Each structure stands twice: as structure tokens, then as C-alpha cells.
Length: 225
Length: 102
Image (cartoon, rainbow over all chains, first blue to last red; front, side, top):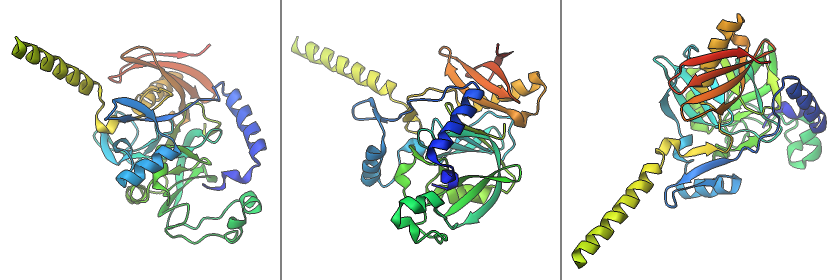
């Protein structure tokens, strides 16, 4: 939900296109989340409408997107964050070839990115400042042009991890959300969103400087490589 | 005769139900995306192997794509400091090939 919108959308897509083509990767992926319906034994598309209905009926996201400890074979150090943008999971590496897996929401089509970055700073109940162009097009954002104080309605939710490339803010964050039903979907402007309980849990186990690897097949942008 | 028919029918229904339930994933796996990628840990395993082979900093090797080769193997495409590599890894984490892409 954050400041990636500072570049004009058209310009940004052009830059992303040139970067992605330069890396020789495929740009467009028809990436659709699906969930298994135990009643019909069929995989069904899980879009924004379906997700909202599911959350209203169950009061939580599907099992697969709930926090759980899983096997995770990696040489990365405990405390490292691995984001699988395609599958909508964030892993926090634990000792003993394990990881905590959380469900996440990621960038919508054209806003997905990949790279190797780090946690540059962290904040509790962070202030959200809408980008200038959002303020220009959305009258509701005008009153927050100077910053929306942290709180339950703040788009950044309960906590935020600010992702840096070297000493430079990438403008991307891992943050909470007041819209927990969006976990599992491609909905953001490039930020990684988690439900508030999960971002609080992650925040309590991560330190500034932690390595963050973002995997995203078909990414529109690359950072740190 | 009727009892035998009912028993047979019941057996068939039972087998059908068992067949259906055996195809259902575990609850934690009841989500997927239509783009099938290698599991994240296997992509990272390939990144580590590629860093070693390419002689570059592991922090400069990023998996940028992956696909299923067969029931047990994945291909992972990587960017290693600007050079493209292809890695083959199986579902137990054994890397069987790392090659610089043409």
C-alpha cells in the first residue's frame, strides 16, 4: 500500500519492463490463487470476492495461509526472511531446517518484484503517508497528506518492517493490514502484507539488518542483484 | 443375492470415497497458484549451489524462475551477478546440475 506509487504508473511500468527484459525474464504471468474445496474436491479460484466471503464465513483465512511451522531446507541463517511471492508465503528461517510460514498478500499484476534486501528499520503502529499522486487523485487521502497516525484503520497495520537496499529505502515494506481477507491475493502496490497477528509475531522475532530474499517469478522489478 | 448386491454397492461407494479423500491435500496445502514454481527452499538450495560454482557472493544470486521437470525434479533459473544459470534439483534437495545458460 506504500510509496512505490511515487513513480508515475506508466513510467514505472516502462522502467520495470526494461529491467525485466534486461534480465531476460518473462514478464506476464496469469497468476491465480486457488483453494481446494473439500466439499466438491475441486480447486476453485480464490479472488477478492471469494476471499471476502470466506473470511466472513470463517472469521479467518484458509488453513494454508495461517501461521505454521514447516520443514525448510536452507543454508540461510535463522532470522532470515524468505518471501515466496508466487505462492503467497513468507518464511522466517528457524534453526534445525525449519521455518515459520505465514500467509501474505503481494503486489498485483505489474507491481510484483524480486530481490535480496534487508530490514532497514522497524516500527510499531507506523504512520502511513500517502504518495503525492494518491493525494492528487483521491479526495479521501488529502486529509492524510501529512501522514496518517498509526491505528487499526491505518493501511500499514500494527507493525512495519522497512526494506532497504544497502542504506537506501526501497519504499517497500512488510506490514500489517486492516484487510486480513486479502492474504493470499495479489493486491498491493508492491508491499508485502500480513494479518496483524502475524506481523506482530514476525516483528518480535526479527532484527534490523535481517536478510530478506524475495522470490517472484515474472517480477516486474529487481532489487539488490 | 440382494445382500450381496448391497454389499458390493457399499464396497464400491467406499472405494470411491476413499479414492476421493486420498486426492485431497492436507489442510495446510489447500492453496496454490496456477503458476507452478519450485518450493522456495529448493530454489534457495539451487542459489547456494550456483554461488559456489559461479564463485560469486551468495547474496548476489537470486532465483528468477522455476518449473517442474517431472514428478521429482525442478529446474530453477538464476541470476548470479548478472550471469544466467540453470540448476536442476530434486524434491529431496539434491542438486544434480548447475550450468551457465547459453
